[in-house]
Image (cartoon, rainbow, N blue to C red; front, side, top):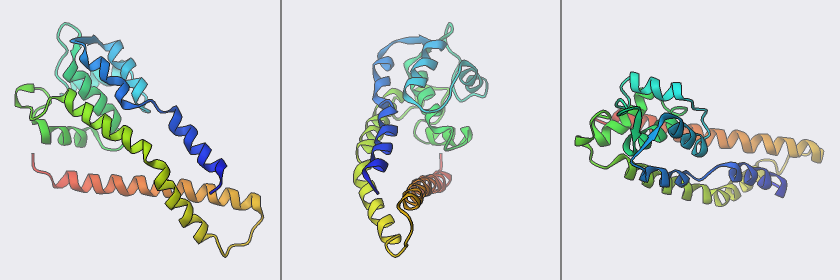
Length: 189
């Protein structure tokens, strides 16, 4: 893998906002729906709009806002739901969050405050983004070893390397997804 590939990946990562940028907003007592959506857009790669959040309330993944304002726990759950909804179904996300805090509609049974849960999640997630380069060096070695015997023009090799790197990143993402989904399905709430 050449410097061009590493720089392309670095550029993608640099475009991602750290999840911890949402933490100051979780210190506010309450937020209007537009503010909640704006914060979620900043720290997630998922498209989100007010209709998504209203639908989650309607489907009982979130409690109704009080006087059209969302408290910090609801905002934390919106951020988690939004982050995970492309990986898991909303039912699976609800199951996972319910595993730790039982009912998403009732904070009296929470084992951990959702704002604290989001803070810990964001710290771990942001740290894992910093570790990507070490992992890529192993991937670089694997790709080089795989293509060592292959003779092809440099332009073709570059395209093959790029494709193999992307395929392997997707395969790793899928592997992690499958592990998480199987583990989640084995949990008792």
